[in-house]
Image (cartoon, rainbow, N blue to C red; front, side, top):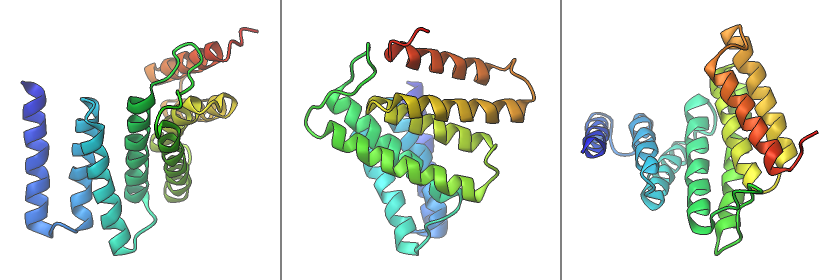
Amino acid sequence: GKHDQVLQIMQEAVRVDEQMHGKESLAVTVPLRKLAQTIGLVGDTEEQLKIMQRCYSIYRKHGVQHGKEYAFVLQNLGIAWMDKGLKEGGFDFKTGMAFEKGDSLKNLKKAKALMEQAVTILKQSIDERHPDVGTAKINLGNCIGYLGENERKIGLQMEAMKSHIAVTGTENHSSVAELYANIGRTYSTMQRYE
């Protein structure tokens, strides 16, 4: 259905960029990253991870380890590792903690390291209040929450919320409401109701 159409369009974008710029061009990493995100939505974590590792490899080959686009590659590679870890081990819905099964925790720790690096590079590349920095903090927070670092997760969510309020100019915005809900869920998994 529609998902197959989306995949075909994304694959065509990759093909066109590869023809125009070459298979190892940095320009190819943008449609590749978007293809990996789409594939990740349907749960094909192996293919998602393979594509993101290719993006990472292209950046390394070019010696580029800075800038917003590189940070997005790191973040999406981290998301792919996180998805793989969660698919492999699952998590406890009550506590929010990942189960240790196979390499699940090892994969989540890889994800954490990549996402921490992405946040650092984004903060160096763009204004810290930019929504992309907030999104990266939320993704990192989600990952570390599965590892039991809920206090830090809440801190990152609060920082992201402040950024969203600064950008939108109001607390009356859907992104702020969603962040409040996420913080509430995190407190709930910590069984903190005071």
